[in-house]
Image (cartoon, rainbow over all chains, first blue to last red):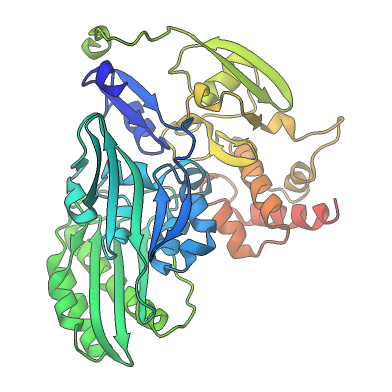
Length: 278
Length: 172
């Protein structure tokens, strides 16, 4: 149907990013094709070591899901997106397909093994999340192709993660965010993924910061060194939510805090963590 | 508006108006509306229910919050057609038989409002909170109404109102 409507048509999922963009005249689609009445597009399933989310699964459904809680970075992310009303409507598939540089899901999911299942007139394909997000508001999706499912590999037992975002108030996009997933053996970090959000055109993998933790004992010194490497990896733009220096400093604080929470969770502790706002 | 004028020729026929059936506060409303009409416009202009307010109109302030099938949504960020077949509750639907809903009563009793512009939205967010969590902590209250902006009260009396409503609704 989208093919028939031509280039000016767009899919409408939860609408919590797209409808405001229409009102602000940042997007001008000639037609919208609403995906909300298609059955079987919303589910959370565990299947051979992975969690599978239907593209139209709402943030609030993921927030409430006991399955999603098993991967804390997912619960952190879902529970802190915007506000209750937006979480009741917004979807995981829509968030990834919109690829807003300040969106939450891409940053949280990039620290895990995530693949995006897509469907279009020429058939189905799966794309690694890192290859799916190409640029700000730009994905690997063809114009008439949509996301059907987001599949996340369940991390090993000795792995833990955290997602933290700093927001000036609940409904606004974060000023900066950090996602961390660590695999530990005692005090030693075996594997680390660290990603930064809202401080570049896409979520940024802070590979130097990951390198500062891998094989090292997690202590104040190694965590501070990793956070400094994350500061260097951030590439923020100055705007209403802060200057470049302010946002880099936020990254340092968020990365430190997320590493500490992730490490405690990797050791089996239950730690509350969600987005912060003043 | 050159973009709007340049209507594409397509193989799909797009109706100028569509039939939308929504149950609002238990009453069926059937209207022919443009597909681009927002839910809040449907409620205010097609149903004459002006208790639902428009504040920022950009998904920030929550003044337009209504319940759709029991869940709080921002009615400025949905099209009316998307609510076709659903049950909507607006502030007008809270009162029963001329008696204020306990949430309304508590907002009054606790001075949880001043100008009242944000109040309908706040009461409907409170409705979802208390239906899922009859005894919320202050932290849970803050989280539930984080999407509703009030520029008068400083929120403290709103928290008190929600705590009072929770107490009064126990066993209701």
